[in-house]
Image 1 (cartoon, chains in turn yellow, brown):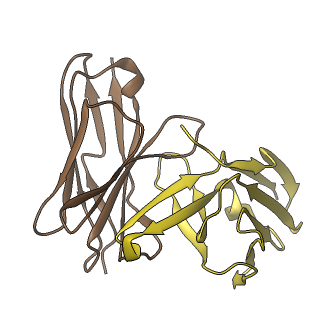
Image 2: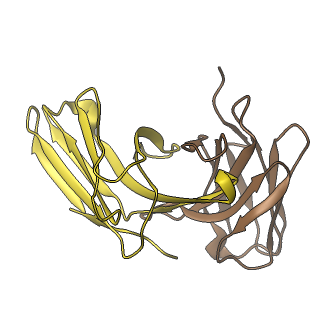
Amino acid sequence: GQQLNQSPQSMFIQEGEDVSMNCTSSSIFNTWLWYKQDPGEGPVLLIALYKAGELTSNGRLTAQFGITRKDSFLNISASIPSDVGIYFCAGQTSLDGGATNKLIFGTGTLLAVQP
Amino acid sequence: DAGVTQSPTHLIKTRGQQVTLRCSPISGHKSVSWYQQVLGQGPQFIFQYYEKEERGRGNFPDRFSARQFPNYSSELNVNALLLGDSALYLCASSRRSYEQYFGPGTRLTVT
């Protein structure tokens, strides 16, 4: 199935370090979302972006909607052990006034934080 | 408010059997989508329903079907199960054109 290119594939960092990951697509999206997933659980929504160029923060997380509408970035500042998990980007295109929408997910970034 | 709920949590089936998975959306959400997540990959879109109408279908065989009920809950049915159908099945709900919220998933194992 279709997946977006997400990098890096994995990151192993020390507690307190900052983290950056990105997601690219060959298609244009009108919404970008970032999710975090713990093993065996459903993805949890972290940030949603709706406009090209938009920069949005949620606590220590900051995400940006790329100007071309084909990419997005997520930054985590001052990482802590509970940041461990898999981070997924997802692009969404809404049609029919929003009645039709589906998410295309990235390949995921595994984040490990050493105390 | 309660989040998206799914049942059952885990399920073990034999090849060739049929399975029905259930999802209740967040109150006020009229859109329900189903995704399949194979181990090590991101979720793949299967179906979307809005106001009880199918609004989108992913690249899955006809063995997969779904429906949405008047209370906006949804069922996903998979017939003639294959080993490759083993996965985490996720349900997500949303308001019209807003962000999607996921349930905890149903882990299906086909033996």
